[in-house]
Image (cartoon, rainbow, N blue to C red; front, top):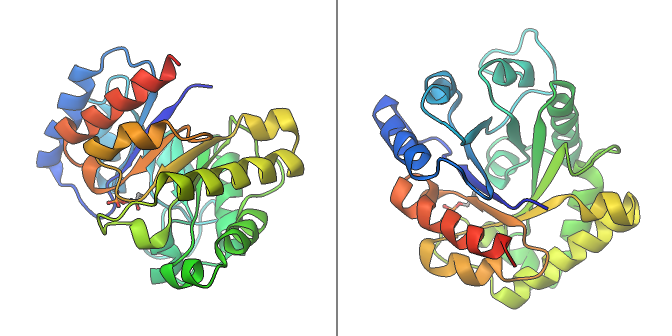
Length: 249
Ligand code: 13P
C-alpha cells in the first residue's frame, strides 16, 4: 500500500505560513508517498492554489450536512475547498470538547458521505497505560469510533498515545509495534483480512526528523500523523523522505 505522511497543523497557521506549503510542494513535485496537510479551515482554499501534489484536509467536522450549529463546519464544506480527508476523534477534540466514540463515528460517516477519507484517531492516556489498560482502551475506541463500512479507501486509523503528543516523548518502538499489530488484527477480524489489511495505520506523537526513520521501520506502521514538525517544510520534508525510503522496501 502507499504510505502516508500526514501533517496536522492544529490551531496554527496564518496566510504567511502558506510559504511553507509552497516550499514543500516545490521540494516534492512527484512524491512516492502520499502527503497530506490538515490545515485550519481558513487556509484550505488559498493553500489549494499552492499545494501541488500535496493533498489537503480538515481537522474536524460536524456530523450533520448543514444546519443551526454556530461555529461548526461540515464535511461537505471542507470537500468544496478541495480537501480530500478530515481528521476525526483527535484526542484534543475528545478532551477539549468531550467527544465520545459515538460522536466520532458519526463524524466519520459524515466524512464518507462527503466523499472524503476519515482519519480516525485513537490513543490511551498516560494513566491508562500505567494501569495496563492500553489495549482495552484502543479496542473500545476502535469498536466505537470506526463505523461499519470502513475500507482502505475511506479510512485511515491514527494511533496517537496522548502522553506522546506535543511532549517530545515518543512511544518506544516496542510499544508502537504492540499497538499497531493489535489494531491490524482487530480491523482484519472485524472487516476481513483483505479490507483490514488495506487500512493505513499511522503513528502520531512527537514524530520528528530524527526519530521518523526508526518509527517507519516498525511493523504495521504505514505512515505518521505529525503535529509540530509538520509546520516547517524543512522538518516535514525530512519526515517525508524517511517514509519514502521505506516505501521501496
Ligand atoms: P506532535 O507531533 O506535535 O506531538 O502532535 C501529534 C499529533 O497530535 C498529530 O495529530
